[in-house]
Length: 401
Image 1 (cartoon, one colour):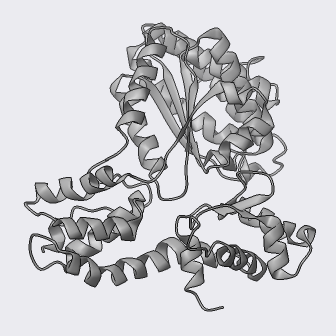
Image 2: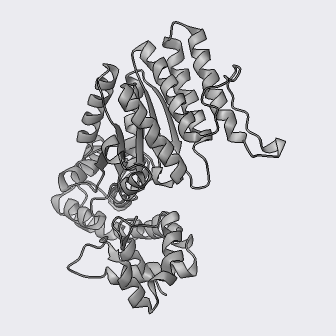
Image 3: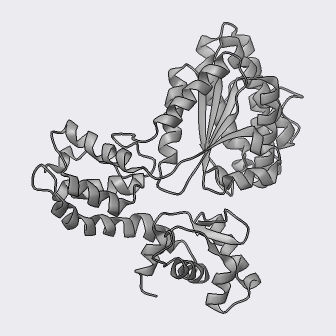
């Protein structure tokens, strides 16, 4: 097979050639866009799921849908060490610039930009070094007395309200997309929930679309108890068999290539239906197959290469970020999940991890908390932990201690 024509794309956030199995989410978002544009009440959206299920790809696709409706959009990726104020300023600046050409009153646009600049400049508070001060690229004077109190919750509510009013003027909306949302600080999460709550009460056309790991709903609930009713939650899971076959088969058909049924059976078994793995195994199989149709033997020959690349780029890079103590903790998790009758990615009780390591649970808390902060594990229920990466337990069990 010609490697130049290989259609598969195993990359971080890279859209696959066939976005299979996500039609329901795309259709639901189209309804949200239309309802908000018509002044109907609608909740913001939160996508959750493990690494490699395509949350970022879906987030980008939803943003494209909003842009197609002439909405103003902006996107940020949350980081544990960064305040929300600066990235939100940049994202909303982009959204307002997208709306500005459709607005009849340039002075009104400048007025909202002045509020945005005032909000942005507060990011410099407490920064004593002039060289490190941030100057937002907004060519209007900063407003005074609006979104500049220094309290992120008050300021974000005022900023979102003013930005939404601009979208109302042009008959569309604003959508703010936040990836890795679980990495926001507790203060920023609380402020974001408060702003979304205010917007929902006003019926203002600004929505937040967040994506994060499975414990993101718990993070939001801990910040504001009403967050359970504030957002519409959509769990993004692995593809079912039909969708996985489409993800492989449709791009191949465009190149005049087919799979036999046994090859598709084996590819689903190897990938588990996880979109990133589907692309990785599909790419390796294509490169090793001598001709069409692609057979199960081609998959068997190619599988070691796909698994080797996953071991280095997908699993190994994450494992290397962990300290020795954290690796010990994860190995104990992997050993406890090695049960033929159990799901490989099932949650493991922290008490059992402590017993297996011969330690007191409290002494393992620093390692567990650090792994959660690094996004390697999550705690979906109290007293349990699970890997954020599919098949990570299987990978660890194959590695020498």
